[in-house]
Length: 334
Image (cartoon, rainbow, N blue to C red):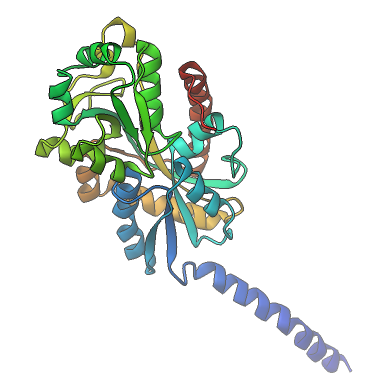
C-alpha cells in the first residue's frame, strides 16, 4: 500500500512538473521568434537610424531577427500607443524619444497612452543635439548666414519663413517653438510624419528651415545640401566643433537656450524583468563597440546604455523639465 501511495503521488505531480519545466524552458528560450522594434516616425530620421544601428547587433546576439517597423503619426503617439497595447512578452519594443515620453504628455491635452504606467524603460540608447539648418536658397533669399540674421529676417517677414519638424510635440518642434518664444518671432510650423520626409522637402526648397536632430542632418550638411547655423545643445558638438551653439550665436535673447534630444528602448509594462535586463545589457554592449560608437559619434550622437532604473529616473526628470519648456513656449497641439 505504501508503494502504491508513492506511485500515485508521483503520477499526480508529473503534470505540474511538466508544466513548470515547459514554463522554465519558454522563459529561457526568449526570443524564439522575431522581435519587432517599433519606430514611431517615418524612415530616415534619427529614431530610425538608431533603431537600425542596434537591431543587427541584437539579432546577432539573440539569434532571432530584430525587425524595425516604422509606425509614424501624431508626433510619435500612434506607434507608441501601439506598443503600449501590445503583449508584454518581449516581442514588441519601442524606440521612444524625448517627444513620446517627456514632451507629449505636456503638449497634448489627451494622450492615447500613459508614458509612465504603460511602459517598462529598458535603456537610454543615445542623446543628440539638434542643429538649425537652412535650405541654401532660402538662406540666400533672406540673407541668413547666422542666428542673428535669422532673428532679423523673421522679424522683418512675420509668417513668411516656414519651419519644418518631424511632428507635433517632437524635440525638433519644441526647439523651434522655444526659439520663437525667446526671440518674439513668428515662423509658420509645418509638421511632418518624421524627420526623413521633412528633410526631403527642406532640401527641395519647399521649406525654409528646420531644427533637426544632428545625425539625420549631418550627411546633408557635409554634402552642402543644407546650411548649418548652430547646434541647440548647451555645448558645441564634437562632430561639428566649429559650429556655435544657439546660445553663443544668438545674443542676449538666446543666452539660456538649450533643446537637445534623446532616444531609448522601452517595452510594454509588465514585460518580464529578465527580458528587460537582457536587452539592456546587450544594447549597452552594442553601443560600446568601437564600430557603432565611432559611427554614431561622427554623426553627432552620444551613445549611452544606462540601466532600466536609471532610465526611469531620467525620463521622470526630463518630463518635469520639458513641462516647463512647453508652458514657457506656449506650444499647444489640439
